[in-house]
Length: 417
Ligand code: HAM
Image 1 (spheres, rainbow, N blue to C red):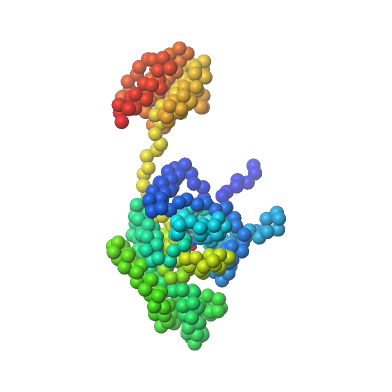
Image 2 (cartoon, rainbow, N blue to C red; image 1 turned 180 degrees about the vertical axis):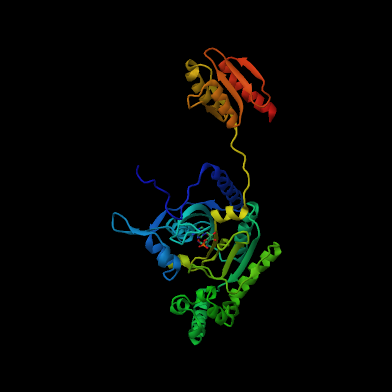
């Protein structure tokens, strides 16, 4: 026998039993985001590699080691999208959305690809629900965006949620601070981990994330970006905070909050759940006022977030979802009645009923058993001339003409409802 094939490492199948819960996530996102004026967008699964190199940042882990990049048949370098913000920003520019009333609010629910070490809550193909508001620097957009993610997580039953909030300032503030931090790191170079030392030039901020004890000690005395923000950035951050306070959303200001993507500026946030293990980040995002310029547009502010569907489901725990309703199961008493039954099933569906037909050649007894298994409310047993309609809840039966089955079920359905 040929060797059995399996799904690639870090990927999984969404089986029918899992699908209902995911549909619920999507419906909840549509309701909450739709009510706030966000409209759905879907971008291609692959993009020009350069979009991520420029947008996400050449020095990030994502671009350096996690992208699925390949050459297509025409010799172009393309990449399976590792995230959604750069593609949405590209689409905003490509479709002239700067001409629309700003901010343009967009949401997506799509799968993304990162070549990461697979473990619980971390996959190589994963799903995110994300929301982006492009075209306004107003702190109210930041607060609204954060509150929407908080509401989504709460509505989906994500447990033990915590919000960390920070501000990165503008690119200029960040550049000046970066130099300051680099100088500080160099003066303590001998106590830093090899990895942090080798990345002082490339990404000194990541030193705050290090597990290495020596590095952690050094970082306790490190200068903090939040102490070097410009007055304007501090004001902006203060307004975001005031709006969140006004909405009674609890958060913790984390001056060392960093995220693994380069486009962030000003507001930065991350929601974690203590119900998750090591991969505790359920969702996060921030402002990316320099991104659109980075990919060839005029300076345009933007803010958004993305939350991992797998982590949402893990952190929300099991929630039983009722199986889909079956109003009518059409069985046939003799093989000659099969065609009549098949037609009746389609008529029932056209009349708006959830109807199923016997498809596996079972005996009449087997058909009734199957109707019970799938939870059918009524069964029509079609004969050559007549039909028997059975109420599966009460066990009552009545004989009628096949043409009467649908009107009777519809009528009973109405009286029940
Ligand atoms: P991110 O923090 O890289 O941000 O990803 C957002 C969320 O996606 C994470 O909090 C996590 O729940 C989920 N996630 C990320 N990687 C994986 C993985 N390998 N397996 C399972 N889940 C994962 C972004 O992607 C930004 N685009 C967010 C954003 C939108 N910022 C501004 N706008």
